[in-house]
Image (tube, rainbow, N blue to C red; front, side, top):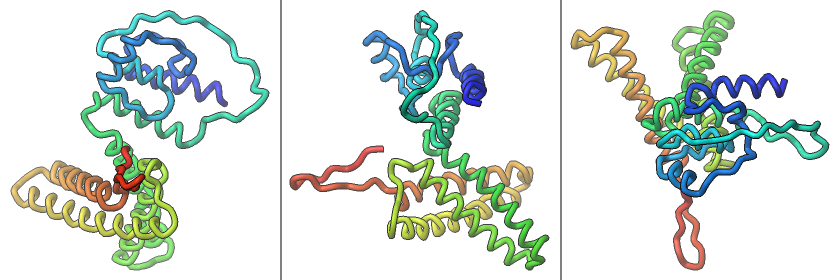
Amino acid sequence: SRASISRLATRLSRLVLKAELHDPMSGFFMIRHDAFVACVKAGVSGVGFKILLDLFATSPSPLRYRELPYQFRNRLAGESKLDTNVAWEYVVMLLDKFMGGVVPIRFIAFSLVGGLGLVVHLLVLGVLFKGAEISFLWAQAGATMVAMTSNYVLNNVLTYRDLRLRGWRFVRGWLSFVLACSVGALANVGIADYLFQRDSFWVSSAIAGVLVGAVWNYAVTAVYTWKKRSVSVAGTEVVSVC
C-alpha cells in the first residue's frame, strides 16, 4: 500500500514538475547554494516536507540534476511520517504550484474544506429531510449548522494547524466562525440575486455569489477566528508569523 501511494504521489507530481525525476518524493538530496537561493527568491511554498518537489516546481529556470539510485531496506525502528495531514499538505502544495502561486495557499485549503462542507451539508439535509421527515426549513438550518461546524473543525486541524485553537479559545473561535459564515451566506445570496435581477446567467450569478461568500469567510475568519497571537518576551511584543 505504501508503494502504491508513493507511485500515485509521483504521478500527481508530473502536473507541476519541470523535470523527469524518478523519485521527486525523496528527502535525500544535495543542491548547490546558489540554486537553492534562486528557488527561495522565486517563492517556494514551504508547505509540508516534500522539499525536493517544491524546489523543482519553483525554480525560475530548469535545474540540472543527476539521480543516483538506492534501495530501501525494511524499517527496523521509528514510525512513518505519512498521515492525513501530510497527504493534505501535499495536495495543497500541488494546487499552489499548479496555479502559479496566484492564490494564497491558505485560501486554497480553506476552499477545499468548503467543498467537503458542501458534501456534509447535502448528506445531513438528506437524512433530516428525507429520512427523519423534518420540515425542509429546519432540516436546512440543521444541515447548515453541522456543515459550518465540520468546516470549522477541519480548518482548525488542517488549514490553520499552526494556529490551532484549543480549550475555551476553540469554543470562542467556533462562535466567531459561525457568525462570519452567516454573514458570508447573506452576501452570497445578495450578490447572486443582484446579478440575476440584471439579466445575468443564473449559473454565473450563483458562482459569483459563492466566490464573494468564500472570500468574505476566509478574510474575516483569518482576522478574527485564527488571528496571529502576540507574546511578550522581556518587555518586547513578538507577533507569531504564519
